[in-house]
Length: 138
Ligand SMILES: Nc1nc2c([nH]c(=O)n2[C@@H]2O[C@H](COP(=O)(O)OP(=O)(O)OP(=O)(O)O)[C@@H](O)[C@H]2O)c(=O)[nH]1
Image 1 (cartoon, rainbow, N blue to C red):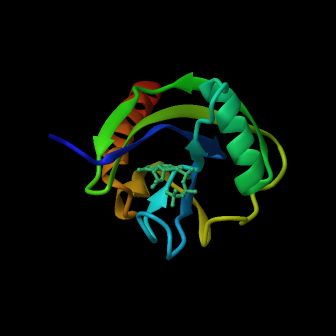
Image 2: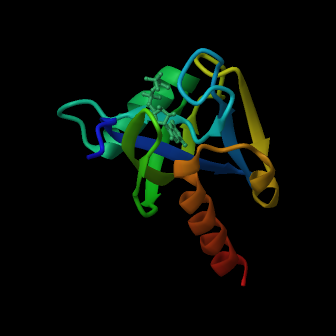
């Protein structure tokens, strides 16, 4: 039997601007320390996923986003917890990202994203994003 704690739905944003994507580095002392991730967080009770994402990005980065295209949700079990990760392509409507909860932010070229250390749950999302982009540029 798998007894790891299920933390529920986590939303995350793939934000593109001027051909680059925004990624954020998790702080030391939290789960998955120093991993790079797409900004976002847990969906709270009573919220829909886009609402949760807009709230999280406002709290974490001080930006307002338009939530656009959903990518395929990923279920993943780490050693100590499991989650369902819901990715969305987003666009910044207002604000400039500032660090509140992460230890670093980076705007990276999509072709460089694989050189950053992402959590295992994000790997299928990175693959789907690559496919989407290749369709766009074909
Ligand atoms: N935002 C975000 N979280 C992710 C990604 N991939 C992934 O496994 N996660 C996990 O999903 C959870 C997000 O929840 P959260 O953002 O509300 O939690 P947290 O980091 O504040 O604290 P906690 O994990 O210590 O409770 C974290 O455990 C995080 O490690 C991702 O790409 N973006």
